[in-house]
Length: 215
Image (tube, rainbow, N blue to C red; front, side, top):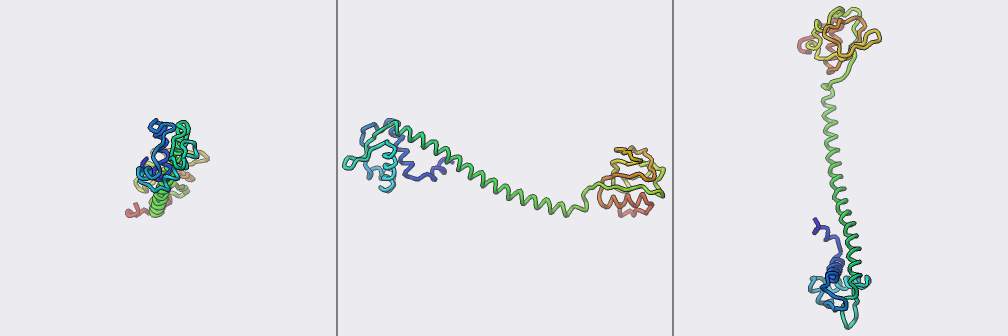
């Protein structure tokens, strides 16, 4: 990971950092003449122009002096230390930028996958809409054959496939009615089931025949 990030730094900068590091470590002492441009170009396997840019950067920071006819002379180890500190700060910012770029790419990939799965879910939901459970209401009419019978006697769940959640009667609600509850005219049955089971409940409370294949 670190090696990949160094590729994004200009080569002349990494060379300048390496030279400054040698100075901070005392390997190049103040007043010491270090290698000439040609030697440095060979050492780092770069062009003389790249070395020139590296030395110009170090000279601008007061780390070395580039003197015609003399060569490159170390000027200040404290300036080299300050330069490395600045570089490390910039390197931290670069690392953050690199990581942020990676995360943004990952987020884009995740968003694409989420959109794909969402479309699949919606498509499946529409296809299964006729089979999904839903709430429905059915009112027991005055002439219903179920009047005076308990829920257990009607065998409601087996015959319709629906489940009664509550019964509204005279402004009151009976939640989860017991099996012994007697049905009365005007009872509003709140039930959960499929579209087909709601139709069977309607047929049942109105005395219509429920065909075996409908159950």
